[in-house]
Structures are given as C-alpha cells and as structure tokens.
Figure: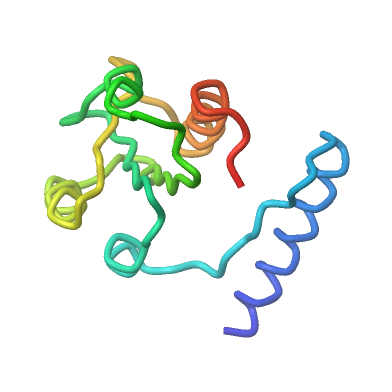
Length: 127
C-alpha cells in the first residue's frame, strides 16, 4: 500500500508538470490502482468506454449516439494481450460501451495515448 501511494504521488507530480508544460487549466487526477472488477462496477461517470481490439463499435458510431458532448468520460485500455472474453462480457453487463480502433492491435502504452488523443479530438478537453 505504501509503495502504491509513492507511485501515485510520483504520477500526480508528472501529471502536474505535463499540465503546466501543455498549458492545461485543469490537472488530471491520478487515482490509486484498482482491480478490473472494481473499475468496471464502481465507475459512475457519464460515459464509460472500454477500448478493445474486437467486439465493439467505432468511435465515430459512438459520437453519432451522443446528443450533447459528454461532461466526463472514463476510458480503459487493456494490457498487452488484450481483454479476455469474460472481461468484455462483464463490462457490457455493467453498461460499458465497447469501442474498437480498427484492425490494428496497439501496445497498451500506445493505445492509451491514441485513445486520449482521439477522445480529445472528438469531444474537446475533458475534465
């Protein structure tokens, strides 16, 4: 637990420095690591998106379904190797929307960056 606290504090400092460097008015909040099931079942943001290499809709299809810009979005990307069928099914049951980025499979760290850029392009800055 103490090790996680140190990591989160370090990540929060990195987020602060990145926000300053890029001129962001709002510094992203870094939360402590959570188990998959906790994230899926406890997240209450307006839009919950699971990015997967399969079994989902495109981001443009998702955009068409919004009548107004979402105030907040929680997006998750899988680890290298992707989500299991069970994880995708569990997310669907918890009313998460499954989104694919097309035919390419990205590394987890690349997917996180790509998802952030695409969401900002589609919806603008999200707090």
